[in-house]
Length: 467
Image 1 (cartoon, rainbow, N blue to C red):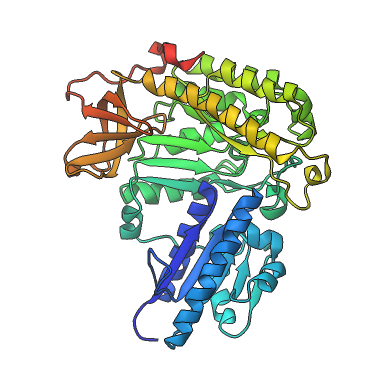
Image 2 (image 1 turned 90 degrees about the vertical axis):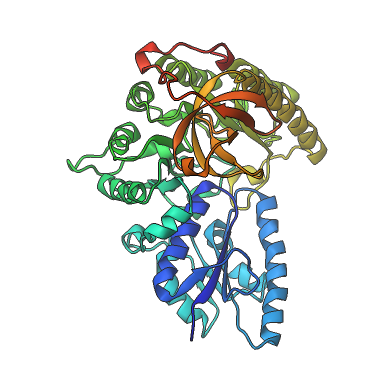
């Protein structure tokens, strides 16, 4: 075939899917595939899917209906388009996708995308499903992106350090779609971070389904904790900021708490899902911790780093949830004072224990979700309002909508818009917040002589942190 083949990858769901989508494109680049932002005109379209909620699954099938029409139009022009479904929906539904969506040529799970060149070659001859968990480690077979490709993706990047989950929460499909917990060796993680830093990346987010269960092999032959890995990543030249997500309250150990205390590069923003404030519901979810256990973790973290802010996940309308159970979630939102949180209506996932439990009526779930989100929004607005007049270090990532405007992220992941020269993209600069918008902060570059952020030993707890 003359000329490059065009590839479009669309991600649904979590940050890990974004990371996986990038690695798919990187793996196909040596095969002559060039990424395109739109499916129209692409030779291969990959939908990288999420199976966490029913709505996400139906979005995939709706998108496949649109891809069928695109494929038919291309065929009328004498051009063949390969449609592939990847990720967790592919892993969970396999052959069912081929049955429901005849336009699909290839289905493969999240552990198999290192085989993409071969899978696409086979899909040229037959419809293919590959959802077996491979013996080999996919990371050993993936192609690293070029320096230019890395730079084009921006000054921040995700790095997968852990996959899978052994917790088996009764609402969750991850143990079935991603498999058991597996951690990448320390040296391979550091090598990837070093390559990213050499291409201009300033901030890395270490990701995993249960990232603080990390137990990768260190250069000393022993299993390292996430806290120890964070210290090693902080030593990589060029990396100014580090984050990690998503955590489980039961896996917050002393080394992780110490990392928050000791590492200036580790951002003071922790996403720590709770799911419910009711101990009865937490037990039904098989979370294996109580609300009091969660609050003790919060206290330990805040004692280690006074300027820490937290976000969380909540599920409303879990099977058997009473009004009293739901109000316990409202209470813990008030007690912690989350800077932000994601809330969802419970969605039964086929094959999970909770799907067979007595379900809460949809109208009750919808009403509770509205009340919970309003409470969360109230605390988030208060957190943002308390930022007015404060000076933060901001990583400037891209141009804004207005001429001369750049957009970056505060240490607390808030979007920050500031008038600044384009030469500062990729730099961490001091910004004083001058205005609070509905979804972002607006600021001005602080004078170059602004003092640096206080050392860990000098930090005090700001009033807006709710500690």
